[in-house]
Image (cartoon, rainbow, N blue to C red; front, side, top):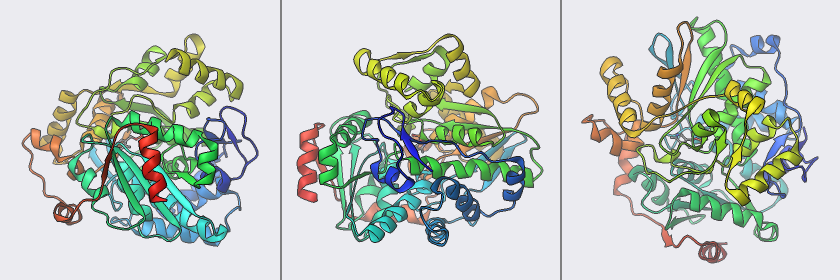
Length: 463
Ligand SMILES: *Cc1c(COP(=O)(O)O)cnc(C)c1O
């Protein structure tokens, strides 16, 4: 399988090189040259597979023999053996037409573990095979950082530096990152918001000489391996529904969205041939993506802090991947749109293009009050506690699930990670022991101002 850049200046690289490159050297994002197609027959063959077995099949389509199958199988098995639920991503029925796909049974209680346990093991494997150093650099709105650190802490040949916005992540998120005391981990707490962190990372990665000299590797969802890992649970949920007799045809998925990574994985699964009906894109008040789908204007708005901080994002780093398909895989037009985005601060689509966007996605923004009300209501009516991100998806699912349809709402985090919101509606939850345990541990982090130079300086000391 060959990978190419959405801006057309990188082509013909393999899967491993695409993973190592992260952001394409021309500033674009890497995508597979052709999307593998999954037939009805193959879907039927996959229906009874366990989660790791299914992941192995899907990964194999994209890795195409570059990693020997036995090695890949081991990587996959190791990555999902750390999950607390045997099913890895169990599906819970909340009510007749609504199922919640629990993606939070990994080590850090958020869905990021599904991709980052695998990516951590993959980096470690590549480092051993190529005898190369890997320096991971990433920005986090809270969950990616914890998950990425957990994926590589203590691993030989790997160092990891994570930037998070100072004071803008939840307490549990902060503790999960900063109580890790392995020497290969550096936490930088940046004065600014997540978009500042993400911009710094993007600019450091865009400096190709710096990136190569220091062997910088990405763990943000600009890395295609993350998208790939996330396609698996769309298939798995579909099969679970079919096996339970809960759905016969296409199903809807509702996805709480920030950087457009998770929902892009759903878009990819659909393009591969998974029968998906509506892809419901749920945002909080930071609703650039909702405005794009409903009005055709992609333009960052004012930054809001919400109860769902992992979605407090204005510039969605994966958006360009979707744009590539929207533009009919025409890299030159993506490059020129991204250029004008940089100059004018917006991208506008209209006419047939906008109709296509609205065929691909249905979008809603769910504001704070509605988010809390949804948590309270689902708790009262069904005895099920949602985290605030999942609640945005569930609220959006409620708006768009038509009679006779079935919607799977992706549960992206465990409610214990976001007790700040849960407390507000007087619900008392018991923390899982793994989370309770981190409250007493010492923290390790360094406060830096939000400039590339300040971050670079810390990086040079660390590497
Ligand atoms: C990261 C995250 C999201 C958003 O996912 P994207 O891939 O950035 O769209 C939603 N919910 C939680 C809990 C997250 O950690």
